[in-house]
Length: 399
Image (cartoon, rainbow, N blue to C red; front, top):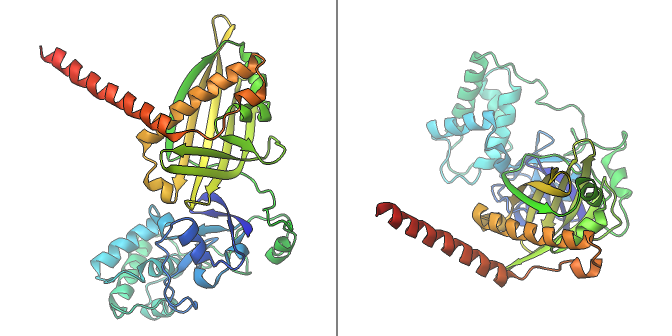
């Protein structure tokens, strides 16, 4: 197995896969991005077309390992793309799809043509789409749809990009991927650790899909709490289900977190970076992780800010927890359930942290995997209490 680190739809991903895994199988089987379709699996039909560093490429004949460090965009990552939105509307208007199987790859290729072609020349459009086969429509509606989008954009004085954003020639995925120096991708892969683990990569910033705010107090001075937050190993020992897998450094902390919620057990392995600002007694932890069992990936961000209480004798810890979840777990990770779970985790963390700062031994405050049934029962009790509280409150109001 080889750990492959790359960006998929603007999100950092690190997942272990066989070196022979194609990029199409990687995004479909490991990330559940099934909008990328497999047809011929010989690079002929174009159903599997994705963007690699902004350039259309056949994902069925591209090894995922060859794309390490690249920026991959599947059809799901183009939901808010301006050109793709126009193309979708045009495909509907011009009856350019029937069964829809070829449509994801067709849209990716058509988007490239819209960006590059100076005018809506039918012949150039047909040549540009010749690598995408459609068994239903006969191409007339497809060509007409692409023509209409190009004409509309040029009428709005949107100039074409002659190279479609291509800045360098090279293997698929090498267009804008950031590497150290000018070494070709093959050399960098050859330097990967023999154990199959990934070479350290940067932890990127991201925009969380969901943000939860939590607050708790500690009976310790802010300066002491801030110093404790700088002890990465100590903080990890206080976090339920967290264990470090390598000596921690602020720029990269490797570890895993295990959580069991009823019948669902997850174990996310990944890495994080730690930022601290002593002037404002605040900091940030940004991490990425994957759960192999469910083929899910997550990005997380914890921002903390320490405020003095009781003339500086105690400390209020304000937390902002942001995350983005993809894969199978995203289908069951409802915000309400995650919010209840986060509240429980923060409460356990606050209790462990207080005990640790008071001199308690680390092996007693370190929390192992959370038991799910206790969490579920607590969530059910809390929700029943809220529900009956609303009922009784409503009755009193009515009286």
